Image (cartoon, rainbow, N blue to C red; front, side, top):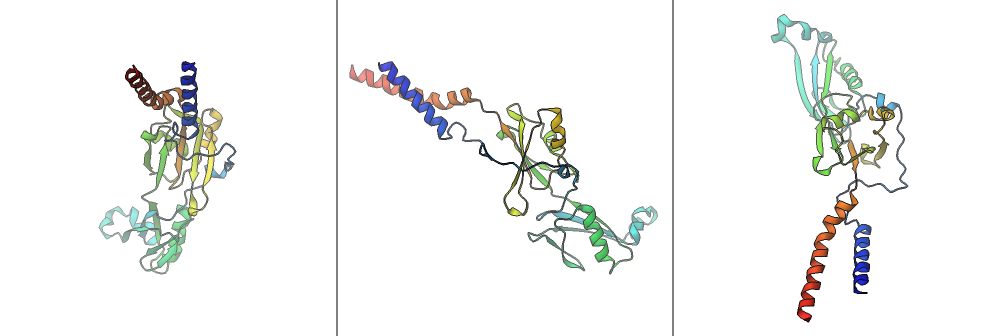
Length: 250
């Protein structure tokens, strides 16, 4: 009878641990079972990177359609300026001569064309080059301790590429449950679910990431190992207490 009481007590203890998130307290970015994920579409894998607030951009301006870039014999006479500026929260950036202009939401090429038109007032046939220098994506590869902030050097980096930059999906990661979380404009985030466990998932994996995206590979839950690690100290304490109580009673 006493053994049965202990067994019932331990059953209740294990159940309480499972139901109050004690065993899975390190899991992040949970979604309910009935969560409606945003739909992946072809445009996500073909779209170009768009400038966003907090992007730091380098602007290079050349006159005469960039003639000085290839005029190697007169490099010292190149009329060119490097400007590093932050795109502010309202999507605008302050540039010399032209003041504050809106660039957020434009692709790199669109911003270059736009600035060429604006600087046409000040330069003869201006040639503008725009580069983003601080684009970052946060990647959780399936093991919380291995999360990384990845600097994007290419304009059109894909989900598969950023995962590769972090060493791939961790051993404890679920390749069939990869979340791409995008929080543009600080509104309700878009959450896309990808299954990269099959070759058919390469289409979803070719989705272009944006600055500030989160790529989250849900970690595999090792119930027995986690339960043992959490419950063992409690069982040790209970056993020691019972043993001490028994010795005192004697």
